[in-house]
Image 1 (cartoon, rainbow, N blue to C red):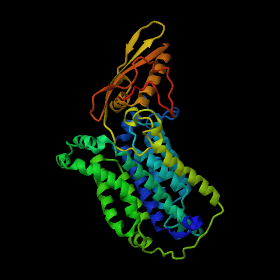
Image 2 (cartoon, rainbow, N blue to C red):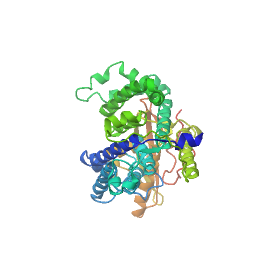
Image 3 (cartoon, rainbow, N blue to C red):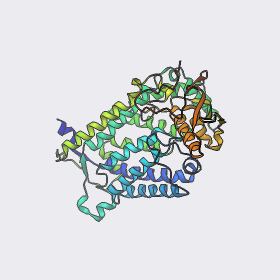
Image 4 (cartoon, rainbow, N blue to C red):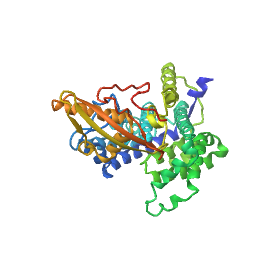
Length: 436
């Protein structure tokens, strides 16, 4: 039964076309980051970069080398698109993208995490077996079919993503329209559409339409009778996100996933008219079956468990941020903070107030004003900075934070030396004060 489900061969048109679109979008994302100034603002101009905790050794390349870094990723995207040295290109891009992801979190986005997962998955797939330069150079690689698991790995990943995204929205500030209204208020200055985005009924569509879309889109795409309507709903949903929230190429990548839900004949007629149809439905169990089941099973167990880890950590994740990342908690809170830092020389007792502008960009300043992990990292950085000047200091933080425009509350214990405390990954850091 399991062998028939996973290893029955099916037409590979969807995977081939997805590879082409994936490579093109990766190219556009990489090159676009250069021309929009994102790299300049995020990786070149900052004096200090907030990498993921544990990855402090992973820092942006000096000078203008990060532009070269992204140009290489863009080139790899083109090589993936045309299917040249596919495995090498795909693995290389995955490693480089992981580097970018872990070296900074000032511009954290769940879509960046999704691209890591997709890239890792694509490394293992035979996406270059048709319509590729690799096949032209080595015709023996050519195939018109693939094992069924190559399709279902995408379907299951998307099901996990959308299900958790839907569940995460079922909390008071989303259901009572507080956050959707705040999101739209921030867009009121958009040209042409800003006024329309302030419509009183739009928050209802965003709030309850978002829950329904995320919760139902994968089941509706799986069933033939509802597939077409679900696809049109996807077009509206993702184009809205692209225009209003400006999240790069990812809405278009999400639309590309629809390829795996449509009949292969539809995909061939639209994109690969000369490709032969595969009709044999052979079941070919590979000798790596056990390895595939072990690695795949472990991967999806992690994907199911990661988004629920915050339930096992004290207090509200909206407040502490512990367990927030890698959990498909997308656009769920608006946070503002009024935070100051002071250091005290342990030997002389001399006190220094920190001017954040001397250390950080405006975006980073917002980060260290409301996010506990960034506050901890910046405190560690201040301690090291003063140590380099020959001073052993304590670092104290006064931080007042508001979540979704609720009253400001003290986030960090002001009596704790933040330069001396440890960071705990898997349990609550008790220097974060209670949310209530």
